[in-house]
Length: 136
Figure (tube, rainbow, N blue to C red):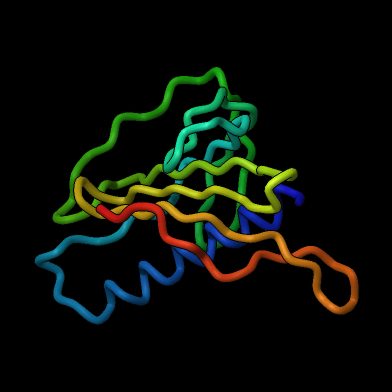
């Protein structure tokens, strides 16, 4: 499974968050403009990606830019129920046929889930329906 497919998935998550926020008033704040996304080595943890960071990107609704994994993460500032910059991570578990994804866009707003890696009729790999692991 290539990282571009997973980054597109997280880009859609960000778009969905912005669409959702348009349905409520400004008192709840605005979702982050971007997510800092880390690809991590697979770990044995039951719910979280605790492996070593391999790659890092900044994902926005408009695109993706590679970041150096060794650079420090920017501080997060709270804006209503959101942070100004969200965090996400994923790990590809090829042998188990899944991608584990986690993201946090506010102090109490995040999700973790496994996405099955499926093969479409034309032979291309795609992400299936999420299996929830945690909600905050």
